[in-house]
Each structure stands twice: as C-alpha cells, then as structure tokens.
Length: 374
Image 1 (cartoon, rainbow, N blue to C red):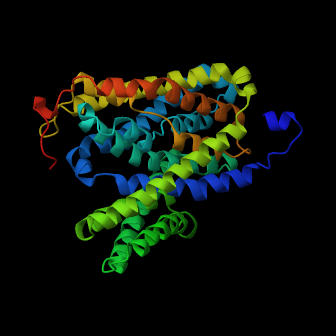
Image 2 (image 1 turned 180 degrees about the vertical axis):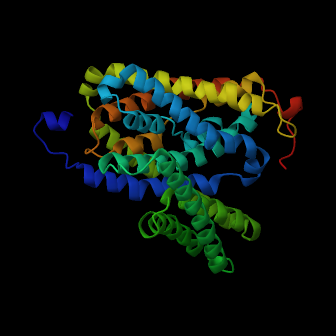
Image 3 (image 1 turned 90 degrees about the vertical axis):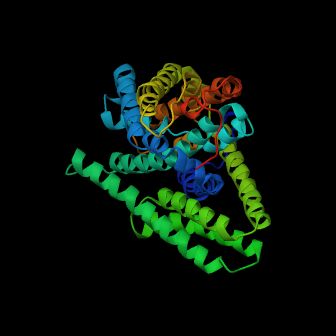
C-alpha cells in the first residue's frame, strides 16, 4: 500500500499472482507436507484423521458458511455459493505450522499426529472444493444440480488420489535402484509438479490430491529401501523449498494487504473468526470426541480435544487460496479480507496458545501411557 501511495506500480496482477501461487507454491507446500508425514501415525488414528479431513470437514465448511450467510449475507448478496466458498477457505489448516509448534513436545504427540494428518488431507479437500466453487461462480452452470456437484466433487477427489498413487509407485520403480540421492530428490521435485499438472490439466481431476497421494506413496516406498542419509537429504531439500514457498506467500500478502481492508471489513473479519472457531469446536467436541470412544480407537481426553480445537491453525494454504481468488468472483475483496483476518487471528492468537496447551497433561490413548505406534 505504501508503494501504491507513492505512485509506484508493484507489478502485481491477479493473473500472475494466481499462477504463481496455484501452480508453483501450492504443489511445493502440499508435497513437502506429504513426504514428511509419518504413515504409521496415519494408520494408528486413521478413523479420526479421515473423519476430520473429509466428512467432518464438509460439516465444518457448511456450518461456517451458515454463520457467514446469516451474519454477513447482505455483503455477499445472500449467496449460499459465496458463503460456502468462504467456509471452505477458512477451514484449510496448516500442517507445517502445527509441526513446527508441537515438534518434540511429548505432551501432545498423539494430538500432533492427528492434526498433521488431518491438515494434510484437509488441505487437499478444501483446495478441490475451492477450485470447483470458483469455477462455478465465474462460469455458472445452471444445469449442475447439488447432487451432480457432489458426484463430480467425489470423482475429482478419488480420481486424483488414484493418479497420485500410480505416479508415486511408478517413480519409486524407476529411481528405486539408483544410489544417487541428488537424482532421487530431483525426481521427487518433478513428481510434485507433474502429478499436479497431469491431474489438473490433462485429466480434469484434483491436481492437489494427486500431488498429496504421490508424495505419501513415494515417501512410504522410499523409507522401505533407501538409506537414512538419502531420506534425510531429501527431507532437508524439501524443507528448504517449503520455507521458500511460505516466505513468498507471506511476501505476497504483505504486498496485497491494505489498511483499507481493516477499516472497511473489520466486521466481516470478526464474523469469519467466529465462524471458523464455532465450526471447529462443533466437529471436535461433538464429532471427534464421541468417535474416540469407539472400540480400538483410543479415547481422547479433554486436554487432547482442546489441543485439536485450537490446533486448527489457518496459515499458508488459506492465504494461498485468498491470493488466488479470482477478481471475477462477486465480492472477492470482501472474501479475501475475511480470510486474511482469520489467518491473522490464527497467527497472533492461536499460534502462541498451542504450545502452552500441549505442555499440559494429556490423556493417553485408552487412558494408558504412550505406546508404540502400530
């Protein structure tokens, strides 16, 4: 804003910014999170992670959309589609930030695993929903019913997942015998972008889901037959790429955010924050909590549920979606301001709170002490 006030052109255009964020930064962020996930943790709490990141995520997005539509419907022309777009965007959580805040904290190991697994799949689901809603809002298809939209959404997700698994398996077969760690790491970089592009452009599937499952597949396969040194080299390289992608995202936010957003849309920001917190509380305390009482799942105590509640941090992915929001979408500036406000609340309030919650006494699975991962 200072640059613009001085009469200087920042050079930022929506088309350039959207392509930079969506086709360069998002694949890096998703793949980096995917190869770092511990698949053993995913297996141990598969029911809770799957519930949080798929059906309960859709419930959360719907609840958030209902709050947004009810409290700020006039600002969005009382459009359910726009409200649902906001709901989806503010439900995207950040696995990298969660890992950085809770890493090494023994008090929240199980909750950290659930949060990381949830955030990973959550991001893929919300990005897919965002892409489909954005496309429908910019080129409305009156013949597309709710059922048809849901069917297309499911097909896009499942097709992208199958594509990613296939490409990850093929890459592992090709580079499996290679002893060159630089070559192997470079191949994963190609895989991240190739899976995204093939899914998104060639097959009309979810590119981000393809990138996610490709990363998880190749990480699982590589851990079975590559040395610890090779794996550490690849993880370090991707950690650097992820850091650079996050830095570029927040730089873009700094260039696009204005004081006017807070002056004109402060109420929309507060409504977005309330919607995000309320929907998160409902799916954690009324969804995940009761599910954890099922046999062989492992009961979650109140301390762990609190950690899951406040651990839904909105960070890089929510910001990336806000930056890639099309200016052809009605009230895009209001929507972008709302998402920025929610992300800022997460960074300023939730981020310092999370380590304090994790340092408290945590109820272990089934009431026992920490056990081995199975």
